[in-house]
Length: 343
Image 1 (cartoon, rainbow, N blue to C red):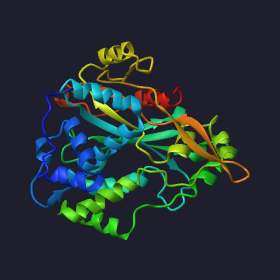
Image 2: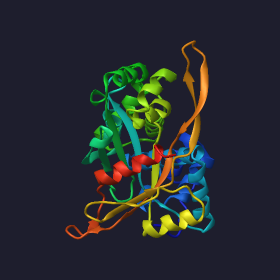
Image 3: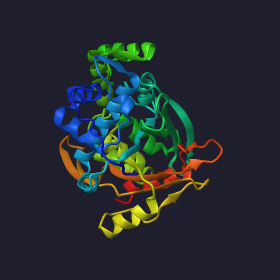
């Protein structure tokens, strides 16, 4: 749903300063002039709210995804050239419900630090065809204007024994990026809802570090065991806990899909429509990336694999509440997951 741009790259505003202190002024300016930002989040002074930290986290992840996904950058360039901004609806993450070394297992690898930023689970979405479960994390203060996180977890115990062993080999080496200082900052935000500027920077940098690959380079043999059983598990083996995709909320995803296909984007073939008909989604197929794999002799071999991608969603008003339908749909989610399979 493009809208007229508003400048939120004012160096005196708290949100810009927080983002710039974390990712640099150039990336902060790019993100905050590309995204439609709720004016309530701009802020002044050195007191930072949990909502501002949450929005800064999303803006930083959005900027990082553009660095990693050329087709997403291409789309955003066209939006900016038209003088428009985008509504950032949600981002997605994939986790492992199994042995994960020093990391909490499954969705709590993220839920543990999203909760202090005002997030709560707003919906549970079984994904049985993928042996996964998804959870929608909604920011309580500004649920319609701060992006949600759709956090899925792969249930390792539902995989064949050999694939379970491969999961343990790969994900059992995970390290936890959150240390004492980061937790002290997050605990302050959790208890008070606000914090000092320096505390916010510490919390934000800690949260961002959680969106990296926390495990060691996967063995090629383990990856080859995972790939036929769970392409999602194979994706996590190479990409870790990276931001899987970012999503633009648009007025007419069906029309936009046709427009992007005509422009040569490698789009998902069909738009996914929820059972209630109010949520419609499609995506650009994942860009390929080159990742290292460990061979039996200890050397690394680089191979092309699916990376992250960009998604589009249309949400209608729920007639029972009169508010935007912020829910997801298990069928839609299962269909969207295919864009990293078909890249």
